[in-house]
Length: 220
Image 1 (spheres, helix red, strand yellow):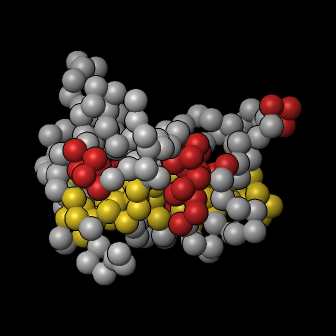
Image 2 (tube, helix red, strand yellow; image 1 turned 120 degrees about the vertical axis):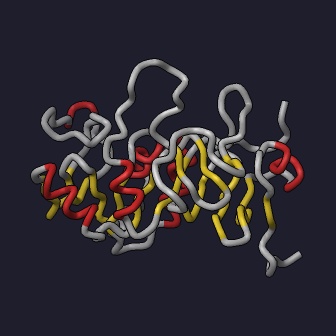
């Protein structure tokens, strides 16, 4: 039994949504990142991009408002904000590869302390997985944030010294949101910016396979 809070998937997505500035063009990866669309305040204009060809994507629709032809890259039904558009897959990747996406939020199997990202294969199964657009996004977007559980179902840390799974991109990740903490990737390594209520730094370190650091200028 724990005496600290553990964020669920919706709460993790909401926490990421808090930090996305207005005016940014943001791609949401498959998994927890897609939930971010449901938590961006209506008063803040964040232009959401989906790699299958949507710009101006809105939150999930109400059950009686579903458009069966309007889906995101994870094949989930979405809405379109006024002024939004949909277009060819090639045009979508031209936006990604051309450096026009301010932020991409992805899931991950592992993130290394130098920002290396592994999010498309564990090599644990014989079936060949598909990398999808993750490699393009990881190098084409101006910044990469990761949102993921802090540990796997069997308790293995996803924040590591070096990735053991096949890499998606080298040194791409700048910030990680987990169900326990917000961690920045810096030249010093992992710097903890925020922890859930009731969790100590020592307890977070125990759940992390790489060394954690506290901000040098923190108060108290």
